[in-house]
Image (tube, rainbow, N blue to C red; front, side, top):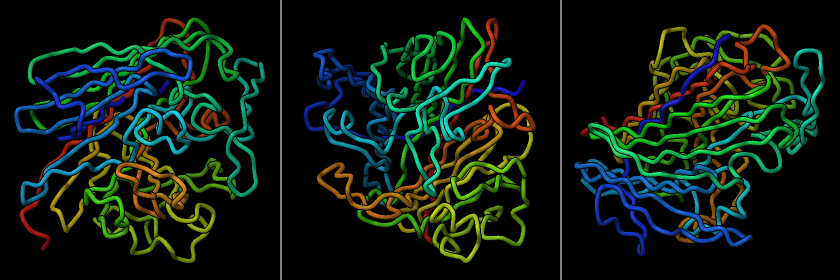
Amino acid sequence: MKLGLTILAATTMLTMSNLTPASDLDTAVYGKMDDGREVKIFTLTNPKGMTAQVTEYGAILVSLKVPDRKGISADVTLGYDTLAGWLKGTSYFGATVGRFGNRIAHGKFTLDGKEYTLATNDHPGDIPCHLHGGVKGFDKVLWKGEPVRKAGARGVALTYTSQAGEEGYPGTLQAKVTYWLTDANELVWDAEATTDQPTVINLAHHTYWNLSGDATKPITEHTLMLAADAYLPTDKGLIPTGQEDPVAGTPMDFRKPTAVGARVNADFPALKFGGGYDHCWVLRAGKGVRLAAVVRDPASGRVMEVLTDQPGVQFYCGNFLNGTAIGKQGVKYQFRTGLCLETEGFPDAPNHPEFPSAVLRPGQTYHHTMICRFRLESSSS
């Protein structure tokens, strides 16, 4: 069984006007749920002046500020200014998605001879599928957060119990996600889970990144490297066919740093189906956490390295952003103004025995680690 552990490493320097941290680890009330439950927000600051904010709602990364080569910090994530925005939002900005991140064909899978039916809350190509855990996935529930510390890092541990039958999934799942902001300018997203009955799981982190720090600018000038020699082709419903196709000679080849916009509109079936990049790349095999991707914004000098222990990474370049989501500072997020790099198990894995298994059984522990590590390049040359 091939299950992973995600650590998301990133560097951040983000403040909200009424939530200025008094220390390197600050807790405040962010707002209340519609039912009156209080929601906390945690502000993490490292000695280099980077700051991350995480909320209990959806185990969401609310913002992340990173300095550019001139030392000017800006938020490099898409999202909302207040809890109300996250409560109403449907784009998964910054969220922890699950119980199964990405898509499951027709919202159905069979486990140990029994068929399970999930919500079909997405319809790419007019073909229904289950997306990111359903109508009320892990991005739409209230987690319980507690501040934590270790040498060289401060963080927040968030826990959630997903009851058997929630969104149609079998088994009661005990989930835990820990964010760490390290002194090495890393934001680590670390997920683990256990179950009392066999179930399927694929937790993922879903931040939309714009390393320019200006969400009115498209991410098409960002350059991307993916440590992948193959990707998963899909049908028009964006469900993998089960094949692994080589990237060589195609617009899916990011083995060398390439501008996101260089080939995104190419006449290529995968890009036609997704309206651009929205596919899972098969990461090169290796033990433990390894490099998955490198994103650069040439203008600001910001560089983000993504590392993971998972078999795949979903690269999505904001093809469905259309200005209807009104985000931070009133910005209407337009087409391709954010990109996602979701380290993960393969989409629709429960229906593909040839894929790394997404099954979790009692006595086993699911782990997933994703690291976003930030650095600067001195010039755009």
